[in-house]
Length: 231
Image 1 (cartoon, rainbow, N blue to C red):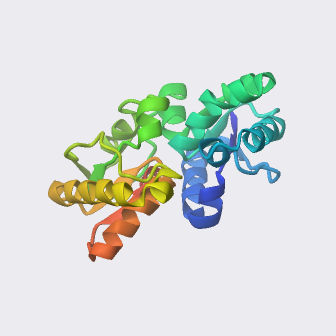
Image 2: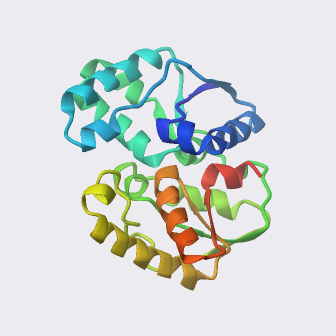
């Protein structure tokens, strides 16, 4: 099987290691990975901000760029959620492309039936289920099943795990005070877990959480699921 990597604009610009880690995992499983260089933003940011015309144009472009892909995989629950749920509404003619788009843990566990990807890790992790992966994509426990299959991972329970971290894209900009309060609660929960690192499926939420941890002077690291699985 060949898969096309939709790296997302955030990973491309701010967390390129996440994209490289995803490729490492996929190739280790024997999958061929294509990277369409024409790809751009899927339009999630614009849609969330109320720019429907711009979001529609980007949705159409996504369908064109990935039209020939057998399967599309992205290391982002929020972008996968937008593509699968909103792109078909914005541009119905590309619905078949959106339906072939999977978040990384979805592809591995649900589509390929794989939990052990041949990785190793040393440390105590806690997992934060990001809002879009949990409520929009409904990935369930796929990420945690992958983490439990990694030798060396001690998976610690995260108190109030399903509570939002406060990022929410534009929400953190327009409602900064509320966002900061939500982040503080999430950081407290992470600290109480006793974990060395917090893991998630979205680089955006991890940037938000990681920034908060750094400002607190916490030794806890924020790591993407793909980075753990690539180890």
